[in-house]
Image (cartoon, helix red, strand yellow):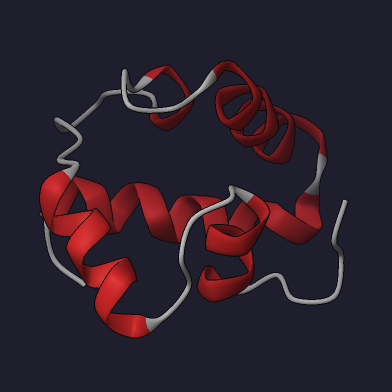
Length: 79
């Protein structure tokens, strides 16, 4: 696991997603998360991505802040 960057671009890389600002904005805009929905249970994640997100929230304080930030952005549909 890459532990060098625990901010949003690093999280995107860890999930195998493009981490350029425009690509992150496009992903956020096209993957809305309903309020109250669990980020890890969203249907657009692969099994490995969902597992990583679950583990990050449950036991990895280093990633949890970036994961929480992504959840908020997906709920808002904004970057």
